[in-house]
Each structure stands twice: as C-alpha cells, then as structure tokens.
Image 1 (cartoon, helix red, strand yellow):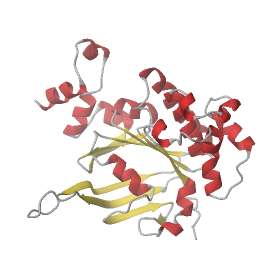
Image 2 (tube, helix red, strand yellow; image 1 turned 90 degrees about the vertical axis):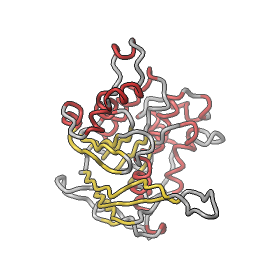
Image 3 (tube, rainbow, N blue to C red; image 1 turned 45 degrees about the vertical axis):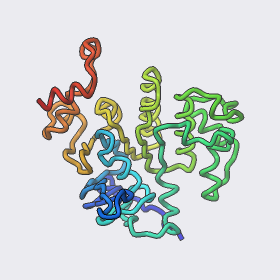
Image 4 (tube, rainbow, N blue to C red; image 1 turned 90 degrees about the horizontal axis):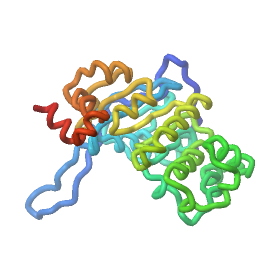
Length: 286
C-alpha cells in the first residue's frame, strides 16, 4: 500500500538526502583478483525546499544520474537516508512506493529512446495515468499537448514523426500527466540541437512556475543550470564539493573543480579561437 506525500512548510526541506553512499561492483576480469568497485556516490547530503529549482552539475561519471536513480526509488543506497516530504524512501519496498511514482516524475536525456516508437503520442501521454489507475481522458491529453506547445492532432502521430525538440515536449507532457509535485530533468537538452535548447529550457521554467513544481535539474553545463535554477550543487567523483545560489557559484566559485567548470563555459571568443572544453579545463589545471 502506498503512502501519499504530506505537505511540508515552505521553510522545511521537501527532499533531504543524508550521507548517501552507493557502490557498484564491476564484472570480474580475473580469477585471482577481486572485482573492482566503483564508488558512484560518496556520502552525499543535500536539502531541497518545496518550489525550489535545484541544479546538480558535474562532468560525466561524477554520480549525478546515480543520485537521481536513488532519489526516484529506482535504486537503493548502500548506506544513508533519503526523505521525501518526511517519508524515508530508501528502505521502503516497491509495493509501498506508489506515492513516489505519482508525485515524482522524470524527463530523460534522449526523448527518442524514452518514448515507445510503437505507441501513438496520445497513448504515451496517457500511460502514467493508466498505470496509476487514474482516468485517461482525451481532454487531459489535449490539455497537456497545449501546455507544451503542440497541436491537438499531434496525439494521433508517432514519436518518429516529430523533431527532437518536439519529442522532448512530448516527454515533458507525459511527466506532467499525473500532476506530480516534483519534476526531475536529467540532461533534458543535451541531446537537442542548440537552436531548440533555449525553447525547451524556457518551457520547463514556465511550467515549473505555473504549476508550482519543485524542479531537480541535472546537467554537465553550468551555464544551462544558471539559466534554470535558483541553487546548485556541484558534484565531482561522487561527492558534492560545493553548493550555493547559482549566482554565487557562477561568479565566485570556491572549490577548484567548480572554478574549472566555470572557466570551461564556452564563449564566442573561445569558440572562434578553436578552444574545446577539454582544452579549457586542462589550461585551468595548469
């Protein structure tokens, strides 16, 4: 039996992550040596308040996606605690996580791989409602399509008939279908053309504000996080090395790794000079 999320005061954390650790064993490559262990998340602690737009930033492999899976109840920590609206979720069995499946929804990086190509868009959007036992009316689907800027007749088409940006809009509509309180976006624009990234980011921001959602936005790009989020946590090698408002972290980074991320943000002058992100990080290290 699932437990509904209770309301929390605005000054209390909606999400609290305390000293969470998650390790993975790699497949053994030798009969004589033990399997290597990947320390994906190392003692991470975070608090996110209701209605906050919270960013998690770091390079690939730093543990961002693992942390999201733990928060969404798709994986379990080896140690530590995760509370969502006062309910400790990291030890609950799957049968009692129904409330989390409804109140926390995710938008993934690649919309083409996260949308079933055999389903029409109207069925994709309605699927979370059907799974959770809610009425899946055509009116609700049309309302969601309009909310993400797609025409009503888009519901009769298939994902491959849309552009990348339009497919991500479909993913956002599906995530909003059960009226969640928490929206988790895992690199939602990194697979999109540069020309449509700003449109999708603006859409997410507008929907989060109008629906009073709590947003957790994950990216490797600090400039994208600055555009969307109020506060940010910087992850490196499985640890949170710095937290603060996006303005503070962007203009006065304290940790050396954060300073390297800030220095690697592309500018027109650097691009014209042919500098890559890897070049800029190496230059900052020197």
